[in-house]
Amino acid sequence: MGTRRRLLLTIPATILFHTVALGATWIVDPAGQGHFTSIKPAINAASVFDTILVRPGIYHEELRMTSRHSGVVLRGDGPAGDIVVRADTLVVGVWSTDPAVRVERLTITGGAMFGGVRTQEARVEIRDCIITANNGPGGCHGVGGGVQVVLGSDVLIERCTIEENRDWESPGGVIVWSSRADIRRNVFRNNSSCYGGAIETYHCEGSGVSVIEENVFVGNTADVWGGGIFNVDSSPIIRRNTFVANGEPAKPAIWVLGGKPEISHNLIVDSELVVYCFAYSGFPPSFPVIGENICWSIADETLTNCGPSTDLLVANPLFCDSASGDFRVCADSPAILGQEVIFGALGVGCPKCGDIPVRPTSWGFLKALFDDPERR
Image (cartoon, rainbow, N blue to C red; front, side, top):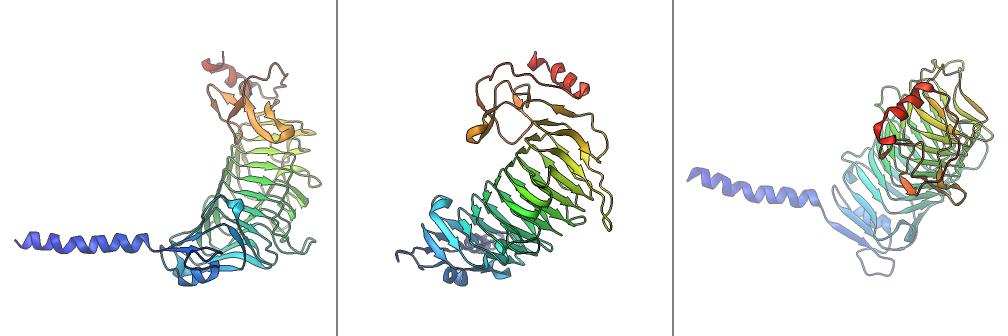
């Protein structure tokens, strides 16, 4: 009897726990059909594990979340392009949150002084967003940029379009500074900066290993160092990305200044250099681990100052329609091993493209291709 009583007393507590964990849902509707007509009052009302559902509209407001918003979900109710959040200084700021705040399906634009999104000592997940036109005042000592992951943050950025962002001295698109991040399946397009056109990883040793994978980088530029990725004293994993026309006037797609990044299974096309390792006073030497990568239409087909690589294949990746921005590969692309696409960010998107010549520079790499019985 005593056991049954203890079980019955336990059930309401368990139900109550799950109710609290799921949290409340707050509706933001500019037409007045929800709890609030703007987002900031909803954030003020929200607490741990609540959801803020934002209906389509243009919202001119700066959004800030702190530790009491841990676990809060800020989600657009529709495609990201229909829910636009705009501010002049900082659009979304998140400080000291754990569990992670989730920001989903929003267009984030207009940020200057601190950019589009800034996280500090925070866990944050950013998914399915458009982060665009967050610009500093210009010059190599300006501020701005798309996303700043700084000072002990742990962030996921996934399936976002990050484009046309400029400055903050270092990142056009994303900076990861003394933090870690998983940056997966995003499109980085036409971001520019002095250092790190699309991504910069900056002094991240000791913060955990960041992973940059299955992203598409197109037309990102840096005035000084690193058109696509600028790696400073950090050791991220950079794998299965597609780089097209990144670099000018800073020439390489990937620039390494210290650290031990692992760079493998990427497609790197239309840049002057593939990877450039740079020695600079005050920074530790660079020891990148460079595995198998495919490059094409590169002015200098070497890994400059990075040591030898026997796994760099010069071959046309056979994109389906690069002129229109379709960087999926043809069914006969050298990016395919067996039935699987293992190089680059995207899968097969069209039939065989025909016999376009390739020029192998690594016999070991070439042998591995033909040793696979699926390719015979």
